[in-house]
Length: 230
Image (tube, rainbow, N blue to C red; front, top):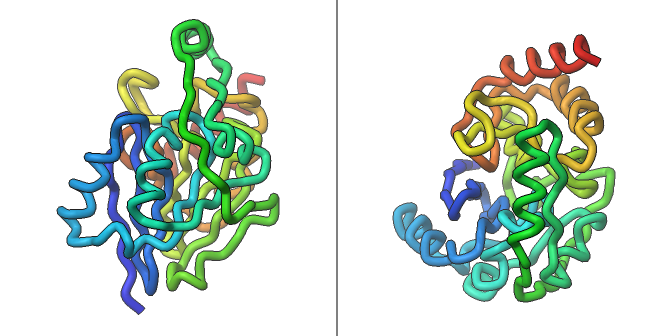
């Protein structure tokens, strides 16, 4: 079976195209990034209708901002955890609270300035805490429930060790100067517990939604440091 994956930047959010017997898109990017999505597909010689499923790591605005036009282009089913389902179906996602002083300031500013109203999109596949295998798409991966950044956060782990972790980690200059735990989260202790859950599952390289990928050893040290400072 042939399998490949590709990063497609959609505004401030990385989306990832997983290509097996069928094609799955992980996350749908920020508002106004539909044209970037089309350009990314053309560069890969992929047709929008080739995409069977749009799997959302969670329902925050920068991950679902272009969901409506992308879903219309592709006709793909939309999957999200049931705890974030309402944000997608109402088009009114919330901005997460901050973890540290910088994150708290960012969250307060965003909540005062941003009034997110997105086109509602029907969720076709409601994910549960048990997660789901992507084998039916010919993709050697599992979607795993990893709450904390949002209460419905999911991560996608390939059998080969690559982990598409959404906002379980961050690595972009406007968020963090070095890769590590998110500065925004509903419950940072729950994020850490989710990392403890997936670290033994064979993850080797971390692909965050914000910033470049990095080796998992960085997160192992982050989790150890977090525990030492509690």
